[in-house]
Amino acid sequence: MTTCDWRWLAFDELSGQQVYDILRLRGQVFIVEQDCPYLDPDGVDPFCWHGLGRLNGALVATARVVPPGIKYAEPSIGRVVSAPEVRRTGVGWALMREAIAQVETRYPGQAIRISAQQYLAQFYGALGFVAVTAPYDEDGIPHIEMLRAAPTA
Image 1 (cartoon, rainbow, N blue to C red):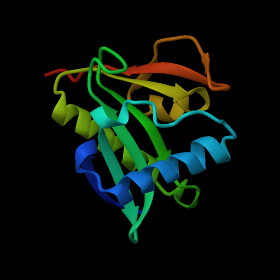
Image 2 (cartoon, rainbow, N blue to C red; image 1 turned 60 degrees about the horizontal axis):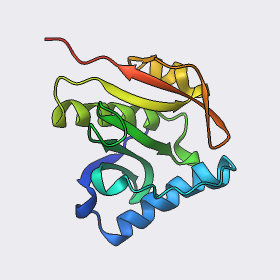
Image 3 (tube, rainbow, N blue to C red; image 1 turned 90 degrees about the horizontal axis):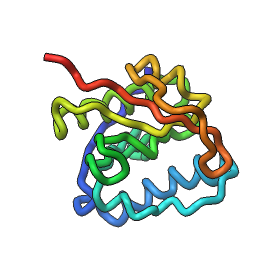
């Protein structure tokens, strides 16, 4: 299993280089690799907490935690991405565990909603997320909304 150095920062705490690295990795995967032309800077990033997973100094994983009321009533996790070179090494699992922990710390007692690419439903299901919508098209890719119940005391 590959181990990353993790940092979570508010948008205003990110350096110009960190913003560039995040947008580059997201563009590399979501736009180029998945052949999905869309406008990634959607106006939500400034409200989010951004997770940066670095390996030997290079950004290899990132996600954002969106506060409740911005995209959904619940806090959400989005723009979850890992670099091709670290896939199948456990980095994606670690990234999601980090993101879930951030939500639980910042927004305790709340459920977490995600919009997942449908082919990843089993992965997210293993992390406690349950499908709550039928599949829908988002930028030409089938997605499904999933919800992770609020922790019980």
